[in-house]
Image 1 (cartoon, rainbow, N blue to C red):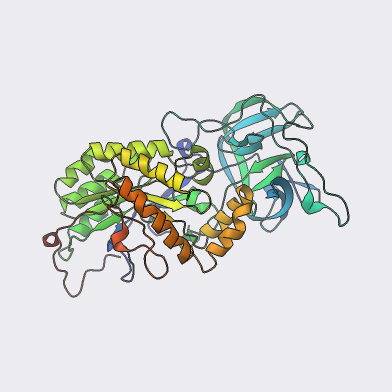
Image 2 (image 1 turned 60 degrees about the horizontal axis):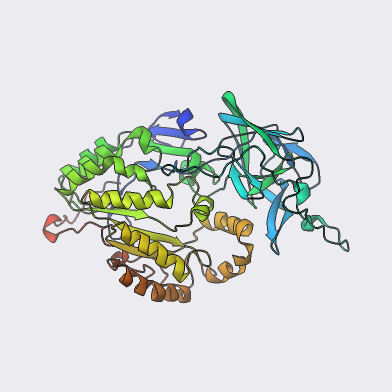
Length: 507
């Protein structure tokens, strides 16, 4: 990690299988927001870089992977740029298609052995997913996904795994030959039925890929893979899954922040947390940096806000309530949808909608304000009047002060991952998304106007008008007055001292 200054050590722990924490001693944690930013704050604090919310999927390195030429190669020997066989929905039928390998890696973590009726044995992590007639399922019910009292879809004895022989091979037909019809969903040629799922002792070497379709054929069955995002490159980390697996932890963040807030020129402006990476991601349960950060901000008279989708914030409600007696505090919770199945597919590794609604209630019960960001709204998936009405009703019932509705942004990195996901799950929407996002990261202005017109009456109906539809500005970026009530501290003018001409730079 040559680009990572202040590195103390890099550690792995069984509690966070597949994730490496790079612990650093930071020189500064208070960062100024660029002057042209439309955000309603000037400073941010990010105790973490990268996010341990996400899950990773891995298989045994000896697992044979089907290549486009019909041969099989060990998973550990597949390289970036190779063409393997993946799947895509074509005319409502899942078909085999060629797909490039964008990234490949290995790790060491706990593993499970999946035995099939035909004698096939697959070694995989608990988070790994296989395709079954009932959809993608994990190897085990427990894993990194949040939520209280819920278990995710997982393999059970008797489940059938979808194999390559059950899928249409439209992409590999020679010209002039008739299409190959897939076998009926219930048929499992070769006995690809799960007979046992057994935990293996210790930790094991595992490997995985990122492909264009988000899946590949592993030992004859369709296997999900981890997705890639273009991030972390400032640390010389790759543009694959490093955001999820390489997390930088600023061990001394509370102490450094307290020192910076004592600077004579500090003007006690609004400091925001959670606008880059979530301060209440799973890693916070291990490092517990936020209590000290909250005390430093409150003790210095600095108003602050927190935006999170992590239910771990509930741990610090006493600290937040104490700080709110001294300074204005805002709390925001991100919640995009109610459908638990769609949530598992879009936001794996994050607390469930039910858990986040319960978090809003607990925040309000603690006497703190709370605004909800309904984001991102997915065109054609979560943007119907019925879905938005049900979601806003649930948010109002939880006691939120206000809500803001944001359509999906597709910035570079996110765009590639989302389009690959869309091609797998909802290929019929690809053409529409191409039109809606033809001008860049922000959705078409006509869509924004239509969404705003439909959302306005719903916010009025549910008493959530402290905020609103946030697609203001020439390019659709958020405007300062569009954040929901409760998510931004109400800062009296007298609290913010006039800054000197030469404001202290704390970058």
